[in-house]
View 1: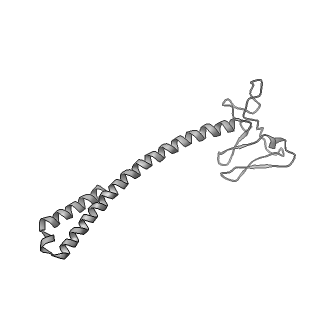
View 2: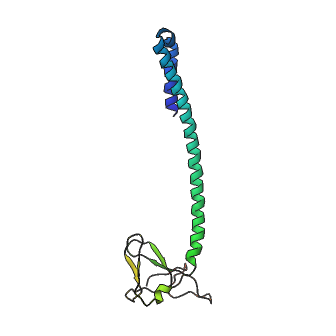
View 3: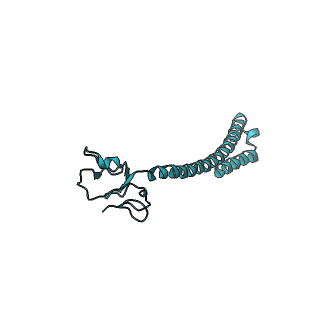
Length: 153
């Protein structure tokens, strides 16, 4: 933006230095008016640029705050009675309710990222998913690793 203001200032200086407004008649006055209008536009653009930069910083701050809030809210949700399986194809963590394990109807769990089947409750997978929470006595559930999440076996 500074470069545009400098160019307009340079042209104004040339115009005033050459006496264009007086010697060129009406055309000189028109050019001088155009240069004044361009100067005003350059100032307005500088103000807008500054305001956009302020808004960008504010939006980034809001985005960071929202991200922290989502982590807090969704992590609490995921810790409560869900089963976690990691997709072997893309590594995405997939969560589902433990009732699916006991469901009599065959249910496939599909990875939302790569659309691969990550679990079928018909016994065809060598996976022993368990709920994310430790059981009531404070002991680890079978299939949990040291971080408290489930591992594929």
